[in-house]
Image (cartoon, rainbow, N blue to C red; front, side, top):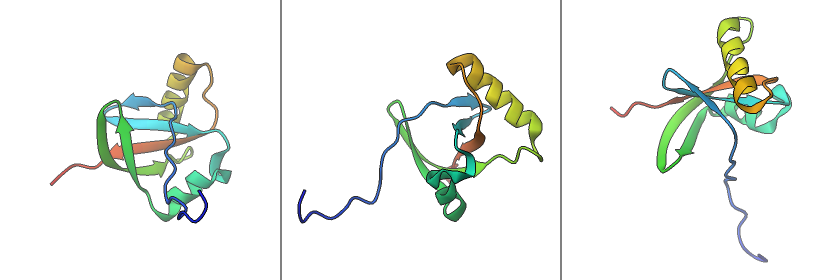
Length: 97
């Protein structure tokens, strides 16, 4: 639209898996992905899952510090989607106080 302000947000639909009340996505291009870099600046995200919406915090899972978690998430992706390589990102819903 000519003259219209550029939107600030892009809504992305992606594949995920869950474990212990947390959500996980995989960045196939690792830390090169701009959305992963954005999380380093501001880890606050908004999630829409089905009809539910909630605020959450996202973080890149350190494969050296948490190899078991990375392995479990990647295996779940392989079983569910047929692939699982990439950087694991954890999304934890914020608890209302």
